[in-house]
Structure formats: C-alpha cells, structure tokens
Length: 113
Image (cartoon, rainbow, N blue to C red; front, top):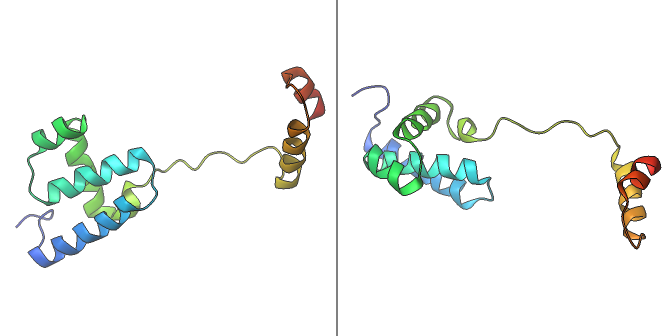
C-alpha cells in the first residue's frame, strides 16, 4: 500500500468529508477539484474523470495528491482578494449616493470618491 492508499474505513470517511464540502456553497473551481478527488477515491480511472469533468488527467492526480497531504483546505482557493481602498462605511455612503442617481457617470463617481 503506497502513501496515497487508505484502508476502506478511512477512505469512506474522506469521501464523506468531500461530499459535505461539495454540497456546501463553494466556488466552481473548488467544486471541480473536490469532485475529481472524490471520483478518484471511489476508484474511477483518471481518463474517465478527465473526460467527464473536462480536465486533464494531471489535474485529477495533482488535486488528489494535494487532498491527501493537506485535506480539504488544500482544495480551497488560495486567493482571497486585495484589501479595498474604502472603509465599509465609505463604501456604504458611495453605494447610497449611486442609488439616488438617475444615471451613472464614471468621471462624476471618481470626483465624488
């Protein structure tokens, strides 16, 4: 048994974790990763998975390896976005200002901000 194979009980537990993750509200990229890993753990061939999901066989193996080493956290997107320039309060004020406009003009918005 290599380091990517698990006893049946552990594999069922991991598949259950993946199912829960898949059913949660996740990004489509995370979803595709999780489904590919789940299918691989269920014993489907990489070439079948790649045809069904429209990904490469490398994609399937790569994300399975990441899942084995990092768990569900490894399947999640790493990019969280950048910090905004405006505070939450400032953003709310700008949104309210825009709601009260009959039309939006980019130059006017830039001047306002």
